[in-house]
Length: 431
Image (cartoon, rainbow, N blue to C red; front, side, top):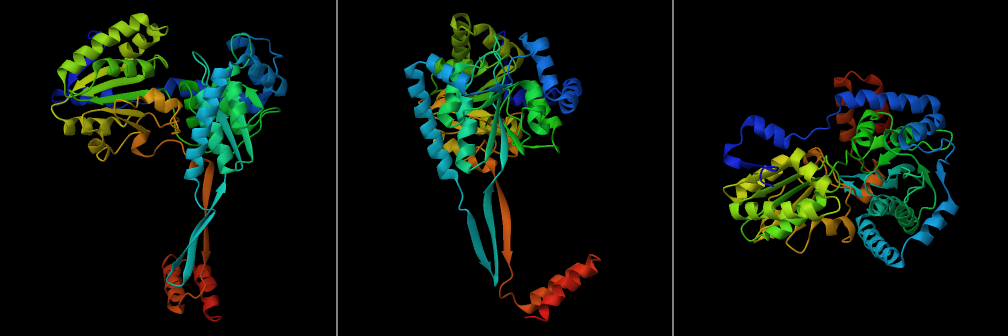
């Protein structure tokens, strides 16, 4: 396994090596041109473009219903075990609790020397949510993306999810959507889903904002549609950095690396550690897991492609590397993890301590698992209820002193805006 995962010394990383390791970018130049073709096709032909995609990509009949309606939801619920339903309900309850605690006051006003200045928080009117499919089903993502939308008060939540091999929607995903509070979805995936929600089709409604993780096609489409529709951030493929010292259990390190790698061959997985022993033993455990896991081939491919072990001389050096990488998931398997948390500047989500594997956070703690990738964690954090809302400034001059009107008019004239100045001065006479 050590021959599969590259091992680097932090102190010896060249500029080129740092670029390879840290500058994860959506390799999108060739992909974007193809994505734009899809977007233009959906924009021009609507449902017909989706139906063509049914035939050409999914190999399902073109007359497969685009709408996933009540009957299919009921059938899906009958196929899902009571144990899974109970687990999804527990996860949903925790996600809802966190989302509700994130809600801001509907109106906040501050008295700023005689003026009232504040913010009114309002929900986005319509949101398109994407629940990915492909190699695995993600009912947890249905919970993570829909529950905050409803908590925020979004009026219309349009859910898109790709069809399975026979054209059916995944029963667990539909069960999760039902638990979250949605009983209607649209059978479309990838770039077609993003384009359909951005422009609308005869069946899929046009939305104000698109939210959700996805593969490279969906993520590239979200970026290509910037200016047409709002989005939260690129979310996918998966990234994990494990920060470990000599106190870390190498077996747990390996399990957590494999857990994120099994998402797909384009996952970015790295171990940054101060312990050569932990690195060596973790790689040995990884080798065993690749042989044992049902998706071991996917894990190995991800490690072949983007796996790395970086040996640091100190925890501080390791932390600086983490901040440079700005990973989606960061796991702290160190002796004093809380002392490290305060030094983390760039990460989508931090898992603190040996009892908190990122996989557990992904499902059950209530924290959202839709997180920024491609180093976007340097600019913003993970999905919250605020992503489904917008702040509207509210202003009232009230008893503002006249000299502030005069100073405002002075600035307006400096900018060459005489009408602005006169509009302001007209109020001075009324004071």
